[in-house]
Amino acid sequence: MTLTAFYKGAVLRRGSEAEIAAAMHAVPPPERASDLLAFDDETGRQVDVDLRAVADNTRPRGRPALGVVAKEVTLLPRHWDWLASQRGGASASLRKLVETAMKQGRLAAQCHDAAFRFLTVMAGDLPKFEDAVREIYAGNPVGYDHFAHDWPEAIRLHGRELAFPA
Image (cartoon, rainbow, N blue to C red; front, side, top):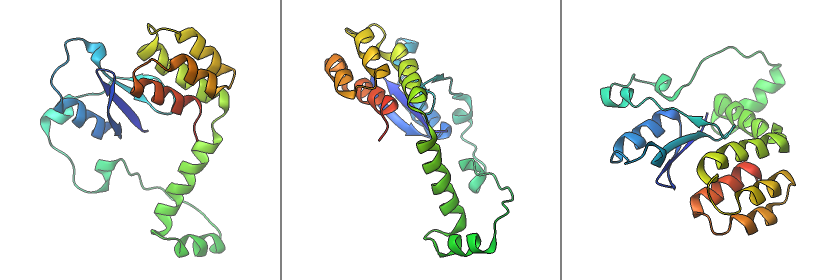
């Protein structure tokens, strides 16, 4: 799961939950809780990040700290041959294939909903919010840009990225 953290309306960091927690822990405490927020890039939902683990500063060694989980995969010999010939090896190739499939597999409606969730929190009080959301659901990125033009850049761009992924 990739998260994006915002600090006072600007992107603080994009990365794993551990990376986001470290970045959030490093900034001065905000005056308002709404000045420091994290969002799931897949769903657009606000995520509560546990900063207590960062205070401990104890991280396990090795790849489990990155969230890597070992499981068995059964493939035909020709599949293993192809994976072995790829740069980075079988695991890296499989991760790239899965990430690509996950991005391509998202329906437009899922992307629009994710953008709506994010923008409701970050831009719900901004001018032309309703108009911009209507353009998202109409599948019109140009219309979205028109209505969101005066919003803080980080919020406008992240909303666009969620709604209309490349």
